[in-house]
Image (cartoon, rainbow, N blue to C red; front, side, top):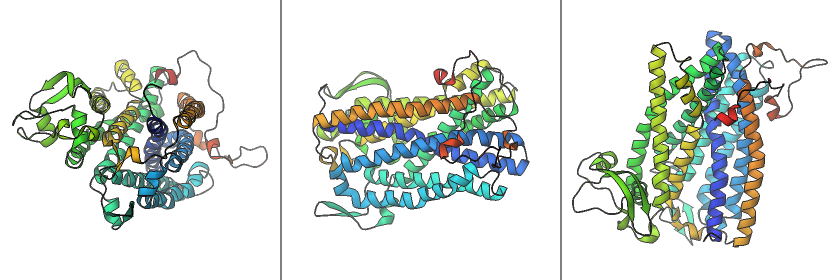
Length: 480
């Protein structure tokens, strides 16, 4: 069907599940740190606006955290079901790294999450703040181990191959492999930027509806400061990451650039747009800027970038996909920088909260960070092909060898269940965002007992639903 084989369906299934999963940890990482900052500011300034925002975003964090855990478990099981040959080959490296993530990050988060969500009136202020900080640190430690494992698959080192299996010989070399520092910084920063635009979009939506209060203004202000500062930093990190990729995965860079061959000693042009044709071995309709490819990728005007024709056809990534996924990521990144600069210009003119064109831009930029993360992830993973462990094991040799019918059935089931389950979860989360923060909600004692509000027994109950205000305005879900 559609020229696909069982291996293609296995890859699509993993890509589908990880595309859902990666959205939740990205927001979890950003929101956890955001909550720590909000509570810290409240403790320092005693400004109740920060407390109200903390209570509001902690509910959304709870829902998002729950969906992230569930989607992550499903994805992890696929290593055994669909990619058992990979697990047999490299499990001695990836298994311990994922175990370290559970032992350090997950246990840390789980240990303090209950206090963070339900201990506001049960423990002292300092202990509660400490719990929030520990959860935030836990999300970053989780990022550390996950990226260490994935980066090793991109740039493996610190191993020996004995009897067809990878044997670790230097754990520090495995963890701190050549691409790890760049990919860790790139992903963590992307999570902060994505969360900033998510928060800023929700604030813009409320302001466009006429709901203007200190909490909403603080949300937009903090989000735009983050965008202004961090989005340009992300661009610089991306540049260093590109240089590292050129050194260790030149075929990926050639595919991203749609660059097929060098001519003599001519510098490499930058192809802005075009359509890389894998069969014709050329980029059709190319719009080029001379010298710029060499300048960006080698920081010189005379060095050349490796071309796709320098690699065997079976070793080339799919340039058609990564060429455009990379440009989607970069294009959204440029829009983020522009949004941050515009917010600064409006802030100086005291129009940040009243400029409707800017507020509409901030609204529509809400999902931009998540889309950019997905585009970047596709670029990274598809650009690694045809290798599952770069230079060591091909993707075709890593699958479990299930039949086409088996993979078709499971893929259809995944699609149906995921859209039903996580669609409902995302819809509920958007309902919470649509309601907005309650002013002075933190003054409730919530002590429990007869006739009193009780502390919820389930984590997702932290996202309580006490009714939605009736109005005829368009929902945030539709506008975003």
